[in-house]
Image 1: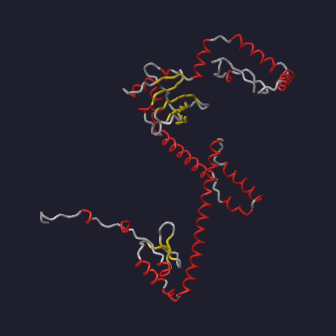
Image 2 (image 1 turned 45 degrees about the vertical axis):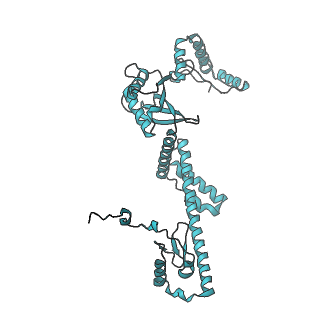
Image 3 (image 1 turned 135 degrees about the vertical axis):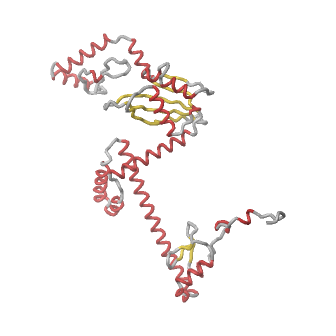
Length: 363
């Protein structure tokens, strides 16, 4: 190529279909029996097929090759034929819309029921039982809509997928909400369940620019092995990464008094401070309010109170059934919140306002 010539890069670019800005013309309906639907597609009223390119030549070729006999319809007869085909087209279109809406409503109901199953900690197989109840009620009360209820999918595998989808949606919502946080703080608690598995819970409380405060559960993780400060930190960082929290906005952390949490060298808080490094916000440390009450309870001597409580409970429950019945009647007369007492048991020691002392409740 000569050095004095230049090539326009835009002219060498292949022209795309959307660059042509083609529009449907109403006259094509009368000439070729074509209409444009809501999705900007050209639909043949005769065979319901569509044409990819909005170009008169394509419509003409389709009409002449497949619907040549329709040329006998002329004048008023052609208009009536087009009107008849248009009515059938709209009826079919509305039928599809109704079917799609029914399918959408059925899916939505399935998600709502799966959500209730998850909230009430029911087994996934409960969905089949719920569907049987719905069908029984519909058969008696609304037999005409029984078919709609039959289409609701509530088998255990579907319920499982629905709950997983809902969980993922909650995580996505929390991600979007966390992006609006100007500052946020975290609260962590580690406890052992009945299977001797350590469970780590992490909560987040964030504030937005309009001073709207949001508090959510970030996640719950099971710690299979050790529960050292480094283990807790790694698990916490992993939970935070799921919702994409910006650690530069972290201004506070709340924990209990366990050594793994507040140890001077290898505690969770100290390891977190080292992980954050130098930053413009100082990390504020808070002690759980409930555990602060436990600390106060350890320092106060309530033994003279609890001995009387324990002996009273044992007297009411163990001496005779008459005493027990009289005590329950007394509770009914004074309209007590609870209706009975329980025996003394070490498993019933509650870490409440009195710390680690036995704290009996009327049940």
